[in-house]
Structures are given as C-alpha cells and as structure tokens.
Amino acid sequence: MVELRFLSKYLVLATAFIGLFFYLVNYTKHKKRQFAETEYFLLSVFIMAGFDFLGSKFTSWFGILNYPVYNTYIITFMLFYYWWYFRLIKPKFKKNLLIAFGLLFLSFSLVNIFYIQSFYTGIQNFTYALGVIFLIISICFYFIEIFKSDMVLNITKSTHFWFSLGILLFHGTFLPFQVASEFFLLGDQKIFSTVLFFLNFVMCICFIIGFYTMKKNYNNQITDM
Image (cartoon, rainbow, N blue to C red):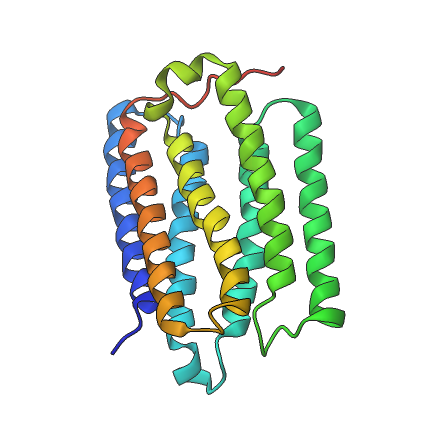
C-alpha cells in the first residue's frame, strides 16, 4: 500500500496547476505586472512538487534513502521564504532582520551538515527547527504589518495572507509533531504519513484559496512604518 505522504506530491502538483490557471486568467485580464510575488510563489509550488516527486523516486533510482532530497528541500525553501517575506515587508529594520535570519540559517545549515548531523543518512532536524523558528517570526512580521494597514479590512481577499497561513499551518504544526514522533511515536510511519498528508492537504487548500483571490489585488497596501 502506498503511504499517504507519497500521495502529497499529487496534491502539490494539482495546486500548482490550479494556481497557474488562476494566474493566467488574471494576468490576461488585468494586463499588469502586479503579481510579481505571486509569480515567485507559484514557481516555488512547482519546485515543491518537483522535490516531492524526486523524493518518492529517489530510493528506487539511486538505491539510497531520500534524505538528501528533503534536506536540500529544507534549506532551499527556508531561504526562499525569507527572501519572499523580505520582498513583502516594507520596514527596513525588519528587512534587515530577515537578511540576518537568512545568513544565520545558511551558516548553521553548513555547520550542521559538516559537523553535527549527517546530510545523507538522516533528516537535518536541527536545521529544520531553526528554519521554522525564523520562518514563524517572519510570518508574524508580515501579519503585524497587515493589521497595521488598511489591508486588514480585506484580509481574506489577500493572496499573500492565504499563502502565509498555509505555510504557517504546515510548518508550525509539523515541527512539534516531528519532535513528538521521535520521542513518543517511536518513528511510527503510518501515523507520521497520515499527519504529513493531512498537513499538506490543509496547506494546499490555503494556497488554492490564495490563487483564487488574485482577481482582486489587496496585497500592496503595506507601507513603510
């Protein structure tokens, strides 16, 4: 029986194509380059699907466990998210903090790879934990700016809000579950697979809602504060 977590790749790929559909419809309709951050995010969802497909086939292709794929995924996407929020957030102080997060995260990732945890025989849990902590702070920065701006009046119509909510619900929930699974579930793959699939489903629903809201642009109302 195929583990549920390996079905997540189809969820993510379907989300990417749904997002592409809404992007093309709205880009053609508005004829404006007002979706830059959404374009980058859409591309990231396709890349995410690519990682998921590679991860599901890696062992059969190369004869080793797929830890290198997911460790590369962790580093790549954490850095992408910091950069993406750097583009969304206007206050210079918070932008500088995001730069610091990226540099600290990358530096720690390299130290962890070479001196602490194996890149090829296990998940880089320490790297992921630090990355998620910085990511949650970054999302909080964005949410704070939303609530300080007129965007709060149309928050459910904001594409970036839904993207951020999906990211937060997935990583903010998965990190403590991952820690708990190591100590209490003793690596029970059935439970792990089910939870991972469910979190991916919730995240993809948020992303799809975000892509749907592209028809109204409520994403550029944050000002420098």
